[in-house]
Image (cartoon, rainbow, N blue to C red; front, side, top):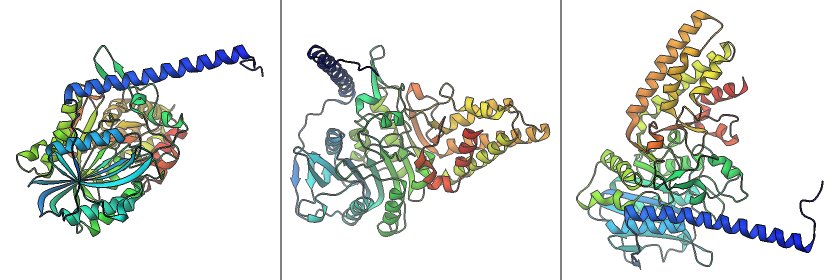
Length: 482
């Protein structure tokens, strides 16, 4: 094979010049998109240059029982460091009061590459640093479930409440635990559309294709840059189970929220349903700025909220924060009491489709399914294998007429059974969705996604508890192999 460049002095200089121009152009392009996004956010939320004092507090900070304790578990030992600081400042604009305690666990890397862990009690315009003299919590691992358990034990012991809300703040990868991955930079996910003066999700490459295209490593939720650990579904299940049993007296969290990308999926809800009444999260990727905590907490200045009212407000506040910035946003709150019904429905639909695939003529069933989940017709997200379940069901209802089976009487029976199951599934989704907001580009997203890859099943998916008791994984395997 001929070398692309001869090893001469002139060509080497030319190569260096080309590399310099390419890298400089890339840096400028990335800076442009970040600047454009920041400018849009500052226009809608106001620029925050306020210095909030952080006070080392050694006195007993325990509080009497309040209506709410909100626990925010911030994993910022990664590229989200500055966003974590911004969000904590937002919390301090409202602060704890007689209705609510706001406590934060922060894993972060300081200048000089020093990893630290800090636990804060957030007051109005003041942040109390409460673990400064606790040697056991100075340098913790946010990717270790024991750290999450420790935070909740500390929180529930010192800040008792009628309702507990837990927010997991970090990157997220939904139902998939990648073997290799990376921190997705803001500029990798979004592009600025000058015609709309908004940012849009860049759908030219899928989320996991982007992960696999780089050698940097990051993955899962609550990922820790220093240790390389993260919370997968089994870690999260273990942590939440322990917290419910040992700290909540067998009661559920009022809500578990994910201030992270892509987490609002049936496969994630399968884990959270056992430990929380409501789950709040996004089907789509989210901007690094995450939730606007000024808006999230504002109602508590006047009084308290019920669990459902608080969840609805969080979803509504997300729309307020982002509808003028992007058309690619989603956030929903799900009543987890309905998840078992939906899982049973998914299993029933999967079993019917499996039988239809076995009995199909000229691959008519596979073609109809492929059309129903296609990127053109079905709402999908930055990761194209994550599709909106409700929209997929509606598309299947429309394509049932194209099913052709080798037995006409059976064909009619299966079509009728599928039609009934799909309509029931749509009704369940509408019932479980307590609140749902979405941008114009995702207007048919109804609040919950499911994994449906177009070509192959990601290796980690089969290990999910959801797949152990649901024939959805059998359907995916059958569909991809016929």
